[in-house]
Length: 98
Image (cartoon, rainbow, N blue to C red; front, side, top):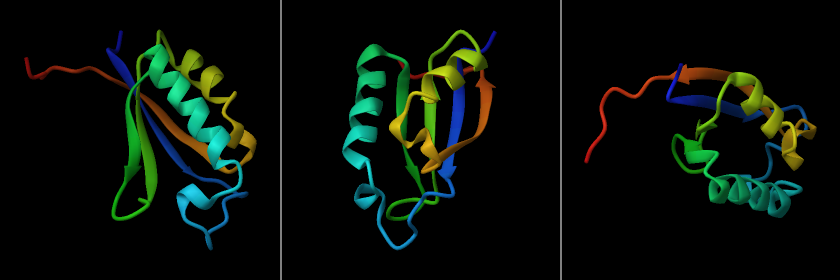
């Protein structure tokens, strides 16, 4: 069993490429949802990858299986097509500080 799952979130068909990430419609609701997952311990790390707003977002998810990850993220206000889960992959952590 994996220690974590890596989730790659990419812009979906409702993403407005003329706006920055925090200017997208529904940003406040999406951010509150993601913050709640972090508070619950489901998301261990997360954020955009790349310069500025990033090309995509990467999440480190603590869950029992891929189905749990996908079911949880289906509740995201941006699951309306603003963001799309491109991949969910198991990640076994072999190296860890401390």
